[in-house]
Image 1 (spheres, rainbow, N blue to C red):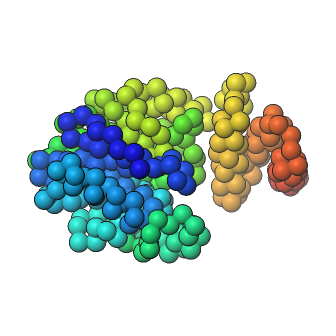
Image 2: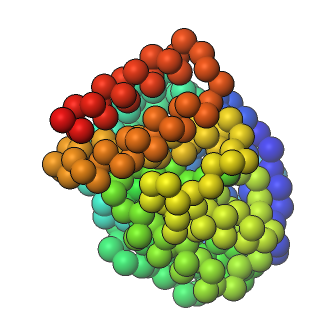
Length: 290
């Protein structure tokens, strides 16, 4: 665990195992706000011990889950007697998929994890005005994705809505996702906190992610200078949208995305795995074309 002091009252915690993940704590005037709880009770005990040594204690704790993904909520069990806050769609999704995730991603557990679903939800926003902290719905990475704004230190915690180098598109909500990022640009922000990146003191990644979303249509994004990581994420996004459109019976539109997926694979270093993937995409293209 690595801890970094931010502004007058913030703490940024990051973990490298099994992949880089972060959480953020605001030491408010009246409450301690913990934004996301990582992969279980063990790392969260480390966080609480660190805060105790810093003299951050003896206040009401409010936990906030930015979205329902397991790597952001498995430490909730340490706070069952506190407010655990999330968007109403997060609660709904965890009731549906939370137990399955415990089994599917068991290898990632940090401690003896049990599913604890948020006990307080909101639809649009919830504000703790006496602490200068606002939680609000910002659909993007997932439909339930929400953000936290600390107006004292001008810190915006965005969960997985910002990712380097590209955002991950998982549902058919690209225009709505872009709107959430445009809203971020209207705020007075000095520090951005995302779920899987280091602290950001400018809006460079935000603008790059927004540009990607605004141009996310087949043949509109310039792939000339893509790295392997760029290509991999873009392929995943294009393929995902194609699959979702196909499920909705929008075959002509889905075909455009699958064709770009095939082109993206052609530009990658050719391996047996890529060849197999390319064949599966070509088969889908042939089926949709027929």
